[in-house]
Length: 318
Length: 297
Image 1: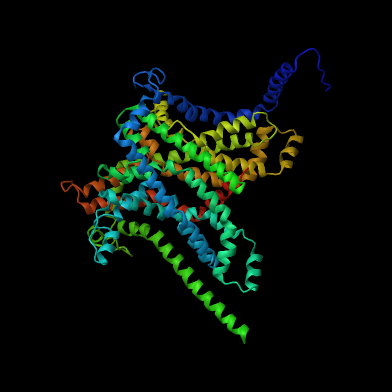
Image 2 (image 1 turned 30 degrees about the vertical axis):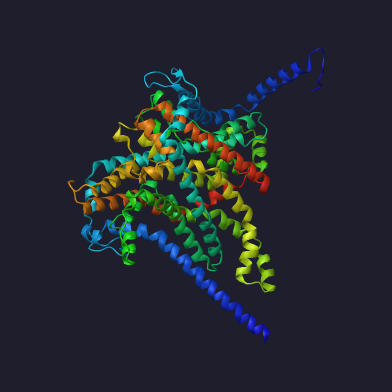
């Protein structure tokens, strides 16, 4: 089709052609748009409406009236939270808990994957993978039930402590033990599953590299040190940055099922506090503000880690 | 001579490596399995023996089904089991339909709104309203204490959407084109050609969504405060576990600690057994899904 530019301005043509192109596009691919519609409606209702609902964080929301009917108070709820006794405690607990999970939990899947790659028997390796992935699929409720059971005064951990001549410890009622119990159970549940990416990266290494190293007289340790580790380094960096990006979004579910008022001093994190404030205490506005504070930090962390990852490995995290 | 020596030295190193790696992995397998095995054994052993075992039980002792009789006599277990099965089946079906339709639509490069709509979907991965505003929206929509409030959250997971879209984009373009030449529209192409060749990916989706429905409890706790009859098994399990650990603290309860524990073990077994039984067959798909997710489209 010949396009003629007459007396109309260029902007007008752009506008016209954009909307007419869009109209044509919608007309031509209406089935595709219709197929996307239900999911898009879901995102609009369940994800975007609550974002509008964040107005409650800046107003005095009352349960009896609509979400937007509360009087606007600006950053009052945020400032109240920053000034409160809980702010530092919650921030410290949230960060320390996820940092400990990161520090102790991060190297183990890598070591596990490296050791597993040294196993020559295929069937044994398969069994090991099957078994170590399993805890990942068991519900948090059951995991926490078992944690409480094994750390009880009458449980396995205390039996071991006593066998070595120690005094039994009531782990679940001691704030100083909460993070250790949490991190230990987290590693138990996730180390196998978190190794999946490393196992896959290791199995993708060209086998001729190992053969060449073998001919040069390299030991097994040298092969790990100079071939395996450098090959999976980009994956390690990517996963590490991703986990740092999620430092502030540590899971609510497990803390909620393990903590109790006696361990709040170390166990209470931002999300569990939001739950108690908002859902149990009906202080919706201040709870929404605290939640927003958490998600804002989250967003900044994720975006900056992604930027770093893009620079380092030319590989964005999403 | 020199060569011989070197060979022997190498194989010695090989042996140490083998012994070390096999023993580390064996210990890890044991650590992963033991807690589950213990719970299974404890659920069919005499409660007083379990209490005296200090968590060390390699085999069931004095087998009794007493705990299971107690659990199955509880009507709520049956109700909630049925609820969980319903949520898992209905929820997963809805998940698959919505996710695959969205992923198929947005896998087409030739539609104008592909970019903005993809952004609209992806953004929810990085930012959301949070627990309270979401709760208030559900509440203001009048969905509190309804089954819809259980099925609505997580209807489409962005992570699964990415896996699905990556898969559709990886299919050869000739599939669509030949269908188009034959006069098929997008819908017929989707249902008759694209879906049948995507069975493996859909299987992964079914597993991911299915497991998350089976284990879900938090949204139910939040959105079903006054309708216990809609509760899933996980929430009832949670109550039983909490009751057993609080029985440990107060002595005046109607049942002894041993009995409460036995009931807890039996409940854990019946709520976890379906996953453990299906798991070995599905395991390869789970891991496959992770790899699919890491392939960026």
